[in-house]
Structures are given as C-alpha cells and as structure tokens.
Image (tube, rainbow, N blue to C red; front, side, top):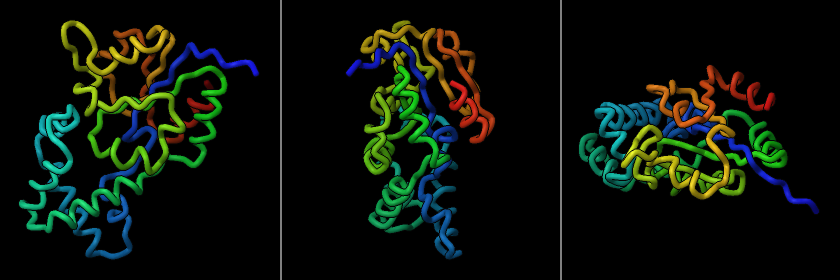
Length: 212
C-alpha cells in the first residue's frame, strides 16, 4: 500500500470554529430553569474576570482547579459540585457539525496534516480531548496551556506557539492554512507565512473545508 506523503497543513481553531460549545454546556441547555440560572452565575463569575486573567490561564500559569476554587468561594458554591459539573460540561462538547469527522478524515487522506491549534486551558486537553477522541482524528493538538504561550506570543524572536510544530514537521508555513473565527490580530499569523482565513459562520466554515 502506498503511503500518503503529507506536505500541507490545515490549522483549526477550536472555540467558535470546530466547536460552539460552552463551559457547563449541559447546564446551559438544561430544560430546568434553576440549572440554567446556576450556569449563568458560574459563567458570569468566570468571565467577569479581566481578559489578562483568562489569557494567563491559557498560558498555563494556573490550573482549572485554581480557577474553580476562586469561583466556588465567590459564588458560595460547594467546590466539588462546581468541579464535577465543569468536567461534565467539558465532556459534553461537540463539533459544530456531524459532518466534520468525515471531512477531516478526507483531508488527511488527501495529504493534509490536520491540527487543532487553540488558545485554551488544561481542561480542554484533560477532559474534552479524550472524551471526543480528538487525538484519533487530528495529527496534532496544539494547546497554548501546555505550550506556555498564545498564538501571537513571541520569545527570543520565535513563535512560542508554533515553533515546536515547524521544528517537528518538514512543512513550510506557506503550505499552511489557518481557519479561525477571530481576527488575525496585527496580522501575526499571516506574517508567519500562514494563509489565514477568518470564517464568518459554521456554514461558511464547512463550505471552505469542502472546497479544499
């Protein structure tokens, strides 16, 4: 059997691109009003924090447990309950479309490396990744928490986020596409040589993938 020679990469953002799921997703979608209200209390307590705080979590400066202990104290919630429901929410995340696994499989079969490249937290790798079996579907999972830097972080003139990937794989940045719902701030990813495509919706995302 002839092996596929891969010389192209598609990087996928996670939140808002591959998935539209939220923390405590199962509670947000609950039919019970009291559960939805509890979700709102916890979610508001988390995201009222400064953007820099969330980004430091994404850089691996503290863990999910560190964050949830603070929220439990602020909202007068039992920590074990908060953590249990948080983990359950991480395990209930889904792709934006049931079509995605087959589309991704098709890209891999046609010579693409497919890579999740996400500014994210330890909870993504610890609970969402194994629950959704993402390592079976993607060639690499790049999570800023474990890379200790966001996508646009630079240290000693090198990309903290992408340096190890390009050291490992013999693929030039010009052979790479990045699909993300966010703006490429300061054209950082574009300046690396990667073709950056900002998606406008899940339908737009699927249409672009099918055209590759």
